[in-house]
Amino acid sequence: MNTYQAVKERLFQLLEQRNLSIHRLSIESGVSPSTIKNILYGKSVNPGVATIKMLCDGFGMTLAEFFSTDVFRNSDLE
Image (tube, rainbow, N blue to C red; front, side, top):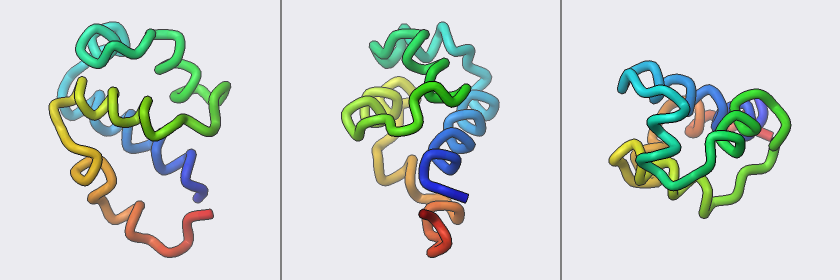
């Protein structure tokens, strides 16, 4: 798994856990729905840290919490 896939999986996981739509996350984070969709569906494979930080703000979490999962601790990430 590469880093982009891990970020994408984490976003899908958080959307499901928090019962949020892409539209609602967009409102909460200030990130456009098209940018979120581009990350989730493969058009943007290198989202910047600033964008991830804004998404974290929308989820009500820190960057550390976002990356604090087994998949990011896995040394197999490319």
